[in-house]
Image (cartoon, rainbow, N blue to C red; front, side, top):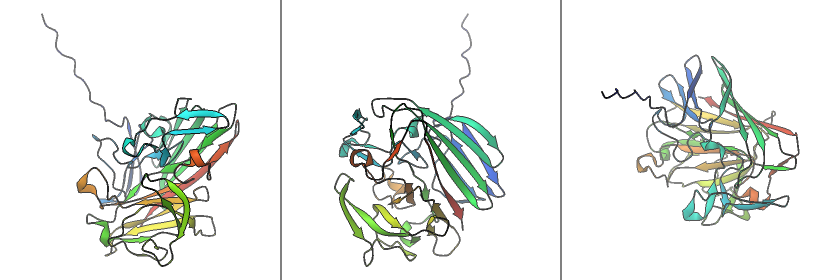
Length: 314
């Protein structure tokens, strides 16, 4: 006699889904990558996220560690240790956005408006070092804040860089009509592989000058910005707003983040999503930092390092 087939429960491609909130604010964070999948205020999305039955394409909401952005040839050497990461941007011969965005994180605490996650990153060919990462998401009257602590668990120096990849949205229309402000006075020049050439350009008088809020228009950005203005608390503030004032958000990053990578989505694989949101990505170092050493963190055995950023709905 044939046995009945067992019922199979199909899990989300991004693992467990942890929801927190405050008032009308709703946040969903995924087990895979500690990814920020949803941030809404009522029916208004603050980020252009993705659905529960999708996985994160184009870096949406992901944590970028132990390096953000691109790494030439996936190859580097640190303190005499050589490493080779997989080339997950093969057309440009780059490794991109680190390793932790595809790994499952462990839930540590969860309350109505707060959750914390942990990931022990063990040595691998792409990162032959040991580091413990802890992430906390908190939502309250001041919006959403995300704090990260990196704790070296290695017996020697550990190279480290961190970034995040939220796509801010200002309504359903093209970003051409959105109003962007970036607190940055310089950009890094990139070559055709998206890697810094070592040259820096002042934005004053160029189409990349968004130090005063203005319409994006036809401007195409896939650009690292630096020389950031900061407030009295050391925070740099960027913003994206709809022209009619019905939606928008400000993004802040503390002194741990010296760069904002800004991407208008012109080359997204999903054609329908091109120029529908703007990725404003806080980064501790520029692209290719594991190769160049530029602003790369070197954590000593047992050392802890922390930084925070956040989103404030308009």
